[in-house]
Amino acid sequence: MSSITGRSELDVEPSGDDASTGRLGDRIFSGLATGSGAFVVILIVLIAVFLLSQAVPALLDNQANFLTDRVWDLTPGDLRFGIPDLLYVTVASSIMAMLIAVPIAIAVALFLTQYAPKRLATPFGYLVDLLAAVPSIIYGLWGVKVLQPYVDPVQTFIGDYFGWIPFFAPPANTGTVFLASVVLAIMILPIVTALSREVFDQTPLTHKEGALALGATKWEMIRTAVLPFGTGGVISAAMLGLGRALGETIAVTIIVSTNPGLFRFSLFSGGETFASKIANNAAEFDTPTKAGAFIAAGLVLFILTFVVNAAARIIIERRKAFIE
Amino acid sequence: MSTVTQDVRPETPPASPMDRPARSREIKNVIATVVMWLAFLIAVIPLIWILGTVLAKGGNLLLDSHWWLNSQRGITNREVGGGAYHAIIGTLLQAVVCAVIAVPIAVFTAIYLVEYGRGRFARVVSFMVDILTGIPSIVAALFIFAVWVTTLKQDRIGFAVSLSLVLLMIPVVVRSTEEMLKLVPNELREASYALGVPKYKTISRIVLPTAFSGIITGILLGLARVMGETAPLLVLGPYSKSINTDLFSGFMAALPTMINQDRSEAVDPAVNRVWAAALTLIILVMLLNIAGRLIARLSKVSK
Image (tube, rainbow over all chains, first blue to last red; front, side, top):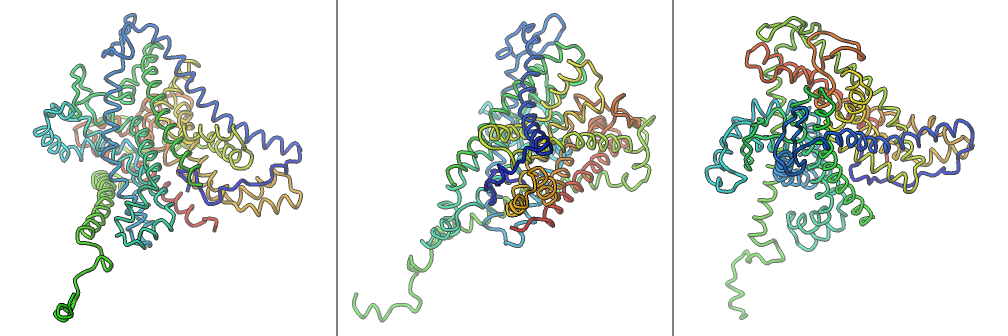
């Protein structure tokens, strides 16, 4: 299984750097390997270049301000589109999902590494991993047809008592951003759990035994030895989960009602994320400018996930350098 | 501290801090234990709930052989009948073509990272693989749309879907292969070098066969991931009710788009088919996933 923190026991440098004989086979083989590595790098660059090059003409034709105007009207010749609503719904739904998923994921990871009987820890871990194997369209279908009736009363309850907070203004319709956040939370749970598990597992035994020897209860041992050791890993796990939630397409598209024009600040209303906006309109990419507007939205999503993922990876690398 | 008080001391002395933790600390400990178990149960409930729902609502249709052998051609939403053959074959074809393109690139990238890569460029490649892992599928689809449809002026066809799936499959296979290559004992490589075997032959004859099962695991997990993707199909692969096995022309069905097509239908026959298609997709993906994990488990290189 691939290690998420990139740290593995046999992470030693393989030898044989000078074993290349300079023969044709050697040169072809190392060329192929290096070429494939370069291909991956070029691929990312190409993604950025192509999205940018096709977004720019549409952005130049845009009569509205892309970053601040809350309109999306792609009438040819009078293009007006802006992203603040998309950005808000995308970020709000993902952060809400993260707030729900991360505490549960930490507890599950602690359960699997510290509490579960040794014999059962691996099969239990597989069960959580299987959540990641369910295709996202099925999460969407299940969320809207099965989970919705159970989440609606919760929304009504929160809306009744905390409706004075703009985020929780009482529900106006079904298919809310909040329901999407709950489903997204389930979808990112296995990712956050897997990485948290890996870092908790790396807690030095001496730290744990030291805490226990000083008379700590199991929980105190976890609080003083395991959690501080895993903090960096848990933060990057949360960010990887966030990156995943930001880009999730079909589950959000199915669940959240598009609710045109009637945008409210509340999580208990409909809306559109970058991804669902693109997916909802994928059938009408008929002219390059029209497609360009959506590609511009996709570009913002790409930048957003790039930044979040890169930050998560950098934290992991720092931590890796620190503990080694 | 007189001797008298010592005499009347009760038989079991009061708890001293040395014997066991104070009450409040013990209670906290119990609460923590309960919370951890509950969290695990909460995490497993959705899995069982989803699988149960899909099985209960879609199970019936799968028992009918028509489901596996017929398409939806000419069948309206209100009509019972037809099958998912067109969608299953579409999903499989697109995934296989994707794998044919993605696997060589991914395996060679992993070989580069483990056997050749040193220094700054190797770190850049590794970082980019991580970034590729995090790319939303809709962005991968838009990229291929920008290349294939807008720039090359081609149609939206099955092959374009495969191309966008390649972007999503590469990182899964790279990471899994990389991890397996790292597990191959260095002694094997050194023994081979000591016999004067050139590096490329050492890698292709010694390292890769040793890590073979791990590579298969990566491929199976990668296939499982791309088969369940819907976003690239929405952008690049319009749905068709008929069987189409030509990746280079015409609309082509796939299981996710089959589900997406009728998901807001209210009439029973269509709704039942949506759930049945969902179950078919889950079965495909889960089988690949479980097979991948089993292979990884059974053939682990012993440390």
